Length: 627
Image (cartoon, rainbow, N blue to C red; front, side, top):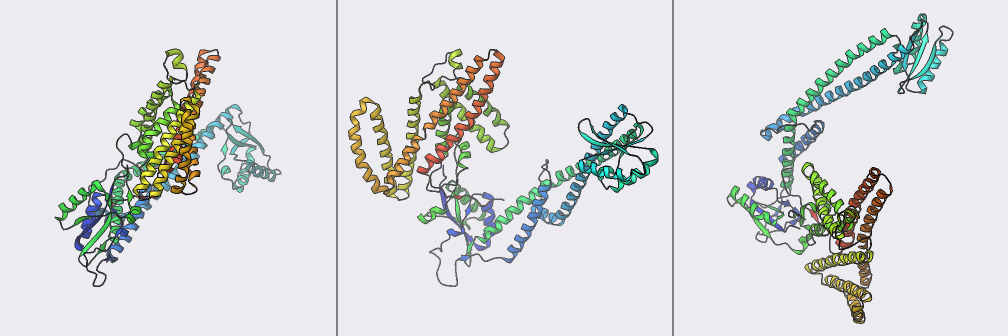
């Protein structure tokens, strides 16, 4: 529900303004709104602007610039530091701030140097590990194909361009030394070029390779067991040294983060609080002797604010509750608070724009109708049991409140699915009736028209409730014609429904003519209240009700997919293959049975329902807090 709000003014001696703001901030319940200010009638009109906004304070502006600059650096430092366990120290914030002003830049430089060193070490370890793997693979090549009186070199070959460069170098050496090259893929992963040439031409070959300026050719591997063993041992020693240095750096960074992250968090929160106070000081109004602070707070918090100010200032600073006038209604910030069962469903309301203060909170209506629509669409005890288990498992382990709320909603929907599944006699489709002889009140597969009428009846109730709320909101805002139009729409929709039933039910056929006469009288009255477009709006409302037929259609789809799963399982021939096929199809049906009812139930609320009474465009409640 939308919490009742109070429009208040905090008044006191000008010398106590900063302390009063600190108390208000500690309470964290007052939404400051300087545009609410009105010159108090008790103040004299004579003199130079006796009631005016507080002028800028040079000291405050200087402090604000200092705090904002430091906050940027603190945020940069917090983005660098990993989220390790760190105790927030019990230190005086002012002392911490002055210390951080001196060391933050040095900490940032040091941390970036450590990060650069770590990245460099990781790159070297990655390259050396790859080379060690290549050495190991080439050793197997040497053992299978030993050299016969010639020198053999292995070069990594990333692509065709490197191979063409190597071929050009071989052509230049053709008159001096004979070099043969072969392109090999080592164990299907690494491509290398294997060069064979006489030992006398070793210096010339190395000179030509160096002239190519290709990094992969800088350190060719000599393909003999002794050289490869030496390369392996040297690489292992260097790799161990690099890994040890990286470990020491990681430990050093972890120790630094554990020591300083808590301090930077403390500074971050304190700086935010101080900047909020400085901004609030700019929203003050004052006279020669007094300060005035205007804003909103939830009405239940008003006694707490009065008590806190009375305890701190012994009556020198007071809270005056003011009348909320019609032109103030658009400025009232919105606070939504719903008890136990309803609270998780605020997750769906947060997806919408904020309602106005004179409108309604959609949460209770979603909490009542959303699970009902969900259960009507899915309506299977087996599926409901699986979803209930999933919700109960997720709630204790979920860390984010959003995920906890989603799991609670899923649990409620699972309970409705179990109840309606029992009424439909469905347990993984017809398995419950066949093997467990479950009773059923409604056979969804064979009762399409009754289910359609039931879905439309639910839509009539849902849309009728929306129109009734819209009528109430219109009368509450003084829009009498709009309220009469909503009332007429309710009567007209109900009248159309009764006329439809009179054509279907023989006992009501006698009422058809009187109902049509009443309809003829009601339409002109509706046009008078809502204008010439009123009949079209009523037709749109009837179309909204018809769209609730999707409840029946999606439920029937779920039933038929479960039926197909069971039929395929029985037609396979092998019991184990049948169980596997049925399980797979039922799993698909459960996934569809979660997403489709969720999407369509929300659509029925967002599109068909809330448009009948909800007015969007409210303001978010942002109280002066600690950060």
